[in-house]
Length: 459
Image 1 (cartoon, helix red, strand yellow):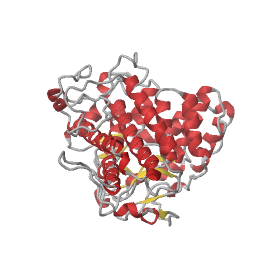
Image 2: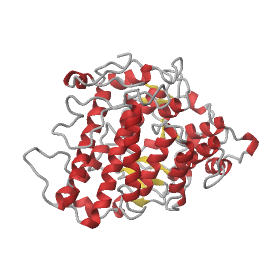
Image 3: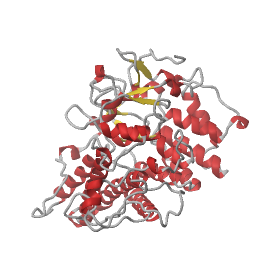
Image 4: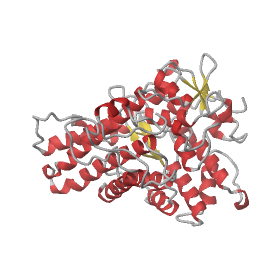
């Protein structure tokens, strides 16, 4: 091995405990469903339902880990890519080998849990009149941030990539913006086009950014920068580089967040309640009483509560420069497998957005657009390199390939791989970026119960 696999970061982390930043919303019992005979009647009911929407996105099948896990498995070349799947679960195995069946349980759960969460958001939005006037913008912003985020994940996994043919013709997923009596898209609701879904996402997230509180004023819940960060991903996925640069720059320019030393980016403790850092823009909160960190489940060794189904391969380390300090964020377990420290803590918070990604997005978007919004691309990339204890590069050495390499190393195993490969038109082994095997099937149960749904090509 050419990297520092044996180095264990156990230095004291100067982190703020998540629980100390919470307000009294923690005392609200989340509500994830409302029976047809049960009506919302008070502001407290509405707040509880909004807490249920956060509970929804923190599901193990969504931002609780599986969306990120499957973004890496789908983008990895089996046996020769950055990670090796050694587990026995059929659904992720199919995703890893790109032989996904129409009844794949993970695709089904991703769809179902996302629409269940969307339905909660729709119910919140339909009952904003229950909230005090001063609280309505915040509640609307939080619900639209969550709803827009879920539609973004759905269209990326279940629809053709933006730019693969005509987005005004290609089918995305059904858009539902009113409460339904069922927890999925509902019967006889067709799929909207990819363009229509993206328009809904941008509308939701733009309104969320306007309405959400400033950073540091909403506990661990969504703030303006969470919406800006998600918008930067949306625009980058569309190759809308000016808007991607501006959205990332808004996060950076608020000066709320800061890069922390590399050993403090992720929670390297074991079996302790999760923490956020100065770099965390938005995270799923995990404690020993609530939440599941499915990234620990699959990436972590048995010694730290995981199953160890995903190992890191030499192919990943071959992308690192010899002195890249990020090569130390790994450990070798008792069977000799190499594992990432990013998910060492079973109760560690799952970072959905962190500041380093914003610098990488701003750098790439500015470089491609020929702009210098906020900073030059060279300055942003050298900032990321400096934290990794790498020397600065020159303008002549700065290329799209170098920016993308830094992005792949910095955000490794965080769920961005397949989406970056698709938007950059990169192959996944022998598969073209737009191969139908890199798109989930519409779940069999949905096709069976909803005759208006059209199945994806190849299924």
